Length: 261
Image (cartoon, rainbow, N blue to C red):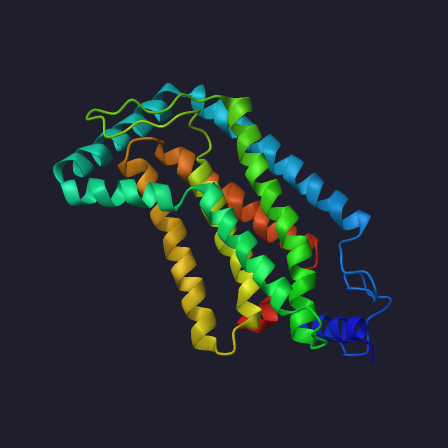
């Protein structure tokens, strides 16, 4: 069996198919074609367009609702009051804001992808080849997530909060939160890329918990610093998860069987 056939057999097994059933099934990674098909790419772009349209409509609906805007402002004021009253919380939140920047997260993903690619070169094991086929789908998807957030911010153009007390400042517009969007997507994509290579359930479970908690803390952090409204981070996280999970499914990235899902 050739190396690419081994990958196909492995991914077929992840779907619950027989190891030799690699042809004639939609979504199988075909022999000799490690990248996604044109149909897969179009499907992901269509999903992204729909998510972007819904996100934009929700953003304008929020801006057109005075009651919702007042509630958002009150929650930010309460959060920044708590932060201002606890210097340790302010310092921690400021550090976390730097660590969780989208550019840092995606740099980590790229380094992990390059490491997997280089360490797996010349390996015929299905485990390494399947990882390489996952990463050629996941890396472009990560950039699509980031661009969706940038475009949505430009389309909605919601001003940043002006809390009392004022903790810190941030440039750009507020909706959706880029930190929340990218950290949620990063957690999903990093798990899909790396977790199947981990040998034990404990290691895989630990990775999932750490990344999930990290993404949640990032959303909370943005509100505690007064640089985003609650609706910014909630919708941002939902958008990131929608594109990440939807993109992985449409690109037929097989990872759930390794997680026991």
